Structures are given as structure tokens and as C-alpha cells.
Image (cartoon, one colour):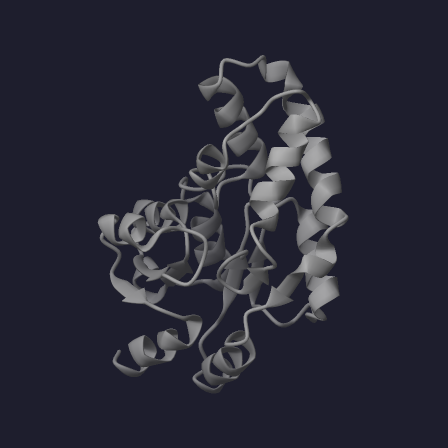
Amino acid sequence: MIGTTVIEDGDIIVSCFSKAFHDHDIHIPPNIINSIRGKNKKEAIEEILTHTNNAPDRLQGIFDSFRANILNNIDRFSENPDLSDLLRFLKFKSIKVGIGTGLPGDIFESIAMHLGWSHDLFDYAGNSDTVRKGRPDPEMILDMLRTLDLPPSDLLKVGDTVADIREGKNAGVRTVALLSGTALPHLLRAEQPSFVIGRLAGLRDIIAGE
């Protein structure tokens, strides 16, 4: 979601992560936090704690701090300017649209409310609370396929992180790497996605060519 359909003012996710760890006297370089973008946030914190040899029992406190930091900065998120036109195009084509995020459900709802999204804007919405396994595990995509009654060949996974592309590949679906998001372009290209686009509006050209 963040970096694909939602734009952040500065690296607010990284800042909120950094502050959450700092609140618990752990100092994590931004490059390490960037490396876990797109993943389930609890799993990401656990991964960082393991990588930095910190006790795993600190996970919940850091996670609670991260949630509080995000909720205090909701106004720093905005909708991708390409999204509204793209959604109208997809609806006109009778293409179902799903959204997934590694953020907890309450944060997803808070951001959606802030952006004025209606509950029927997407045909599927998954988050780290409803789907217990985070990216690059394919469970969220598999849950989307089950919910929307689609075969893997009919789904196109769009994302701006390495975890997004790996998730799509693990689910056996085609992938689209969005270069205008949070990951460095060369890292996304190295994952060999099915398609690469510079901005979200480029998805129209892919679909028109199907």
C-alpha cells in the first residue's frame, strides 16, 4: 500500500520505525529498516532484533511504539495521484482490484479514513492482522485469489518493494515493479518482475496490451 497506492511525506515509515526502536534504546540505521519495507511489521521488527542481537521480548513494546508513531502522523499520507483514474479505468474494464499491506488493520483503517476511501473502493483488502503470514510469504495473495475466486493466471501483483515482487513470484502470479515507490530501482529490477513501470498510471498500458 505505502509507496504504491499511498504516498508518504518523506520517509515517514522509516522515521516511525527508527523512533520506535530509539524509544527502546536501540539505534537502527535507515538502510536496515529500508531492507524490510513491505513486510509484516511485527515480523520485520523481529527480523531486525535478531539481526542486531537484541532480545526478542522487546518486540511488542517496539511494535506498540511504531503503531503510535504512525497514528500520530496520519496526516503525512496522501493518495497516489494516479490512483483515482486508474481505479475508474479498471472498474470500466470489469477488473477486480485488491489491496494488501503489512500494516496492522487499525492503521490501515485510519489511513483509509484519512484518505476518504469508501469500504467498497477495493474488492479485497488484506492486512497483517487478517493474514498472519507476511510478505514474501504468498498467503495474502492466495487469500485474495480464494476470496475473489480467481486463478493465479488472472492476477497481476503490483508493488514497490522487493518483498512485493517475491510475494507475487511465490504465489505463482505475474508481477509489476513500481519504480516510483520506496525501493531502489536496481533492486527491483534484480528480482526480474514480469513488468516494470515508472508510475502507477503505467499499469493501464500493461492491461491494454493483454
